[in-house]
Length: 320
Image (cartoon, rainbow, N blue to C red; front, side, top):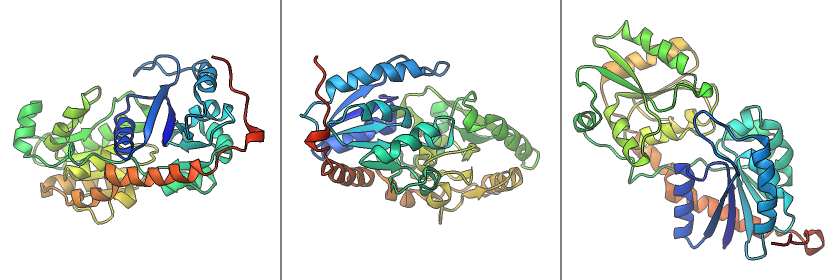
């Protein structure tokens, strides 16, 4: 099977891991990134997405079985070609954020729609296949906390709460995390450090997870946050708001807490820190391993490739 993947972020670790796992299963994936440059301070403009349309029209030839649009704003470019069926994967902000109308408009035109949680499907208002992003259990695994802390330079006589996002990402709500940690600091017997990390090589991220006493998630909205699954794979306790599929992922994981208010976040984090134990999350994380999620995505591809656009509806290929 040959797939043309159109994405807003070709370097996203969860995407590259998914592509590698699919290629291990015999799928050939050609990745096309949206035009323009993106950084922590610069987002792509609507013009960048518009400039991607002719590139997709030129590339999406009969050698492909389908087009996989990753992120809602890539769907119009993927659908502009009428030759191939489109699989649309939505990431969370494209269902709950300001770009949601684009996702809702394009979803009915796609052969298959993949979301990361049932909550996202309900918000979209249509039947979808729920496939959370997978976690690499070989990369994210438990390690001794003492050696991890030595590697990242964190003190042993303090509590370390991990917030693995840039504070500037407003949807992650860093001010709330900071407020919660400040409240927790007044109730425990040692200093509590809120550790933010971003721009770290993905191979090194697991060390930070293993150095932490807990992961704190205070996002306003999520789909299926990778940080929660990665913390689970490292047996690190999670204290999180009830966003996305977090309640489902943390069901039966102990110690960990799903909260619905600042007070519950504070009480939950105090309890986790004072227990000082690792969680049983790694076993639960096996349900969302890269291998399992890749198998489910392959099944979506197989269904979609059987929905090829009839010849009478095909667009005449653009000249190269």
